[in-house]
Image (tube, rainbow, N blue to C red; front, side, top):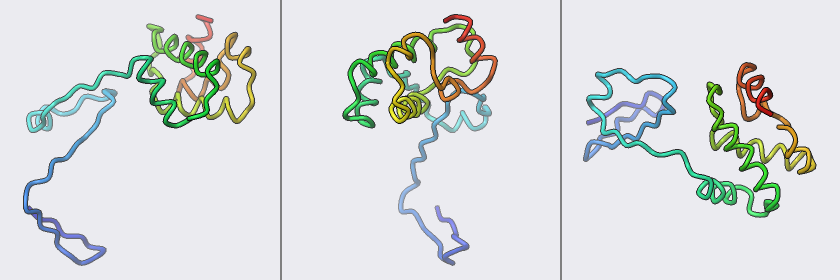
Length: 133
């Protein structure tokens, strides 16, 4: 197996066939012909405890009360049945960053979802979430 790189004018030859890992967020179906050539491994979405560990890697000094509140809100939003695009880990991390930088009082997070557009990416989902508040 080999491939040519135009920019460097060199050919790279592999001693063994490479293993390629492709991730999918299940938003679109992958073609059957592609899937026949794949080994499938499903990775569960992180539970709350695992997600807290992930968050702490990014925010080692996160205030415990803030972490508690954002996790409660995040998993509540993910539990809503009519949300089309559930927020993922990256949205949670971005949301915590925005809340931290803004100096948003934790009490406000308990009553509403500030910066909801970081977590939810379309108006229908934001409106749906707001109806459940």
